[in-house]
Image (tube, rainbow, N blue to C red; front, side, top):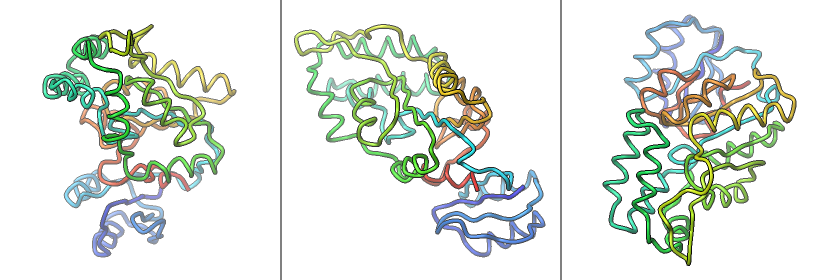
Length: 276
């Protein structure tokens, strides 16, 4: 196994200490913010050492290559982008704090996602549809490394899917902007230019996200060992568990604990460094 270390800033001293601790046979530079410790022993102490220094770490087989995978599926809100869209839409109604509290509880797994979404969307009733455009244009930002990640995935030939418990207004635009092959999300009902406070059709919840991954995987004839997924909240857990590699990105503790890997300090492009 190789030990991949990533961080906004990585001191040479820390790399050398980790190499000594794990008996690594060498230190290999991957990027300016990522290094590979070759043939490193898997030790529990590495976790605490890296957390104290705000470093991401991952034990990765030397033979793993991104081109050996065929499907990448990602969540949108707080994973691909830096906001929760519904919270920002609610801010247009002066209800951000109330809606954000429900969002947080759902992401921690304290409220069923379907129930939480229904409650939050109902609070948007009567809002002008133009608020969605304002959120996209004025508040939506890509998380660091998003464009580099998508570029790397395309170069390796992976099919890419954006699946969200958020809304099609945003996923459709991000699909075009970043070049995703597919996008799935909830559709807000609009009548006479106003949000009705309802969702059209079935809710995209945790089970639906998992189904999307499995359906696209089967459609293109992949083995489950060829799938990768990333997300940040409890609503992503089923999807992460269904993937061969599940990456918790700046995620809630319940997600970090169950994912294959956690990236908590660096950008989305750090996912590429989990492969040779």
